[in-house]
Image 1 (cartoon, rainbow, N blue to C red):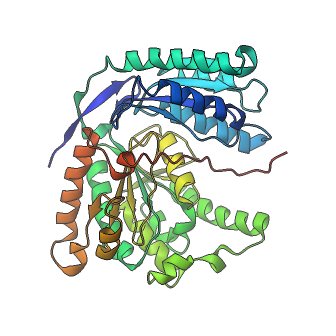
Image 2: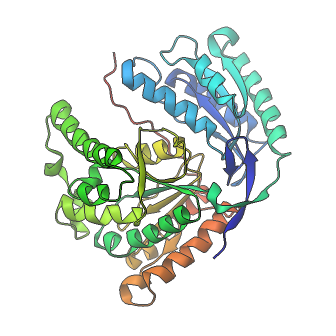
Image 3: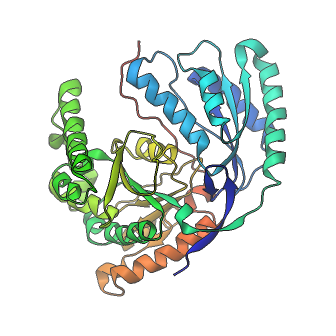
Length: 393
C-alpha cells in the first residue's frame, strides 16, 4: 500500500492543493471579490493551483456563539494546508472582527488585507487584483515534496443516500478511514443528525468515558435544539423523500449505514463546527447533515481531502479541498459519471470484496493528493456555506 504522496509543505502541515484564497468577511464584500476574481483569473488558474473565493452570505447581524462560529470558520478555512496565501476583504463595519481574521491566518500563511470603506469600490478591485497577482507569484514558487500519508486529514461525508450506501460505499470508506488512522493520519466525520439511533454504538469506540459522554450529549442536544427552536421532531422528516425512494425506511437504518463511514477506529474526540483537532486520529465534528454546510465545516477543521458517498447522486464540491464522490449504485454512476469519481457497485454484485474496493479507492486518493483533479474540480463546483446557529438581528 502506498504510504506517501507529494504535497505542498506549510507551517501547519502538507496541502494536496496550492490555492490562493479570497475571504470576504461579510456578504457586502462579495460583489467586490467577484470583480477581483474576474480581473485576476489570468494569473493563476488550474485544478491544482488556482485563485478561489468563499461564498459568505453572513458576517453581520450576528452575535454570541453564532458570530464566534462564523469567525472561527473564516479563520480556519484560511489556515487549511491546501491554501498557500490569503486575501481578506472586509467592508469595514461588519460584526465579524476582520482584523482578527487576517491576524490569525497570518500566523501560518501569507496574508493580504483590504477594507472597502477605506479604499473605495473600484480602487479596491484594482488593488485586489494586484495583491492576488503578488500572492499567485509567491505560490508558483512552491513545489510538491514527498511526505507521509500521516499528513492527510480526510473528511467523511454522505449525501443522497440509498440502500447501497450502508451496504457498500460507506463500509468501503470506513476501511479507508481505518487505513488513514492506522498510518497516523486524521479522519473527521460530521452530520450529527445521521447518528440518531446509532450514537450508542459509535460512542462505544470512544477513547475515554469523557469522550463517550460528549458523543452522546452532542447527538441528543442537536435533536433537542431542533425540537426547541424549530418546533419539529427531526425523526418526522427522516429519512428524506429521496432516501425513502432509495430504499431506506427509518432514521435508525439510515444512521447505522452512515456511521459505517467511520470504520472501526477509536474516537479521539468531538470537535466544534470548524474546529481544528489538536492531535491526529478519528474525530466526530458537530455539523448539520446539510451537505455543503457539513463539508465546509470539516474542511475548515483542516481536512485537505473529502470522501463523499452518494447512492442517489450528489454533485457537491468545495473551493479548498478536492471532493471524491463515491457510489455503490451502478445506475447512478452511469447517469452521473460526469460528477462521480468512484464506482464500488462491484461490492454488491460480488465482483470484489469491501477490502479490495477500499484498496482501489486508496489508489485514487493518492492520485488526487498528488494533483489529479476530481469531477467536482473539473466541473468548477466550489460549494461553501457556513452553518448558521443563531438569528439575524
